Length: 108
Image 1 (cartoon, one colour):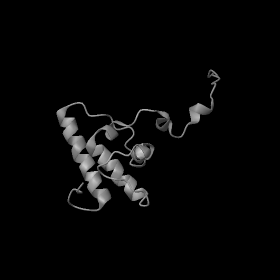
Image 2 (cartoon, one colour):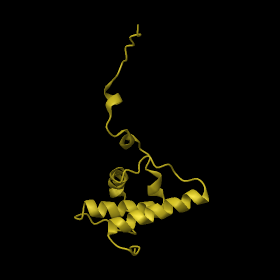
Image 3 (tube, one colour):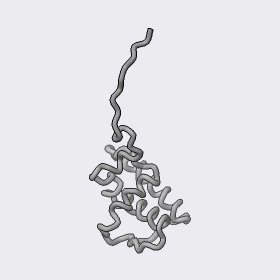
Image 4 (cartoon, helix red, strand yellow):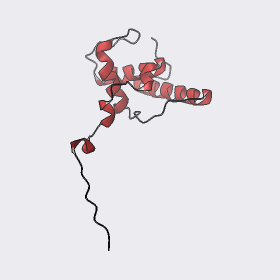
């Protein structure tokens, strides 16, 4: 006969985006190539915003962090070795070029 286990669950057990509750930004936003990817996606999602590719704009930090979720890269672990960093750079540049719709890297 199976054992019956009572589980106490609360509202926080059913969060849809638990990563959004963290106050620390994703590691891609601390890397220049990851920030460029997030800004490219943000410019595609919201063309009415004046997101500058070079300038730091703190008012867009939450939107950049949400762009990481839209790209489904929230669970991507930070690369540790040189080979992992090169692979991450390769994939981020490919994603950026795909978002920009070009075959050449975007100019800053």
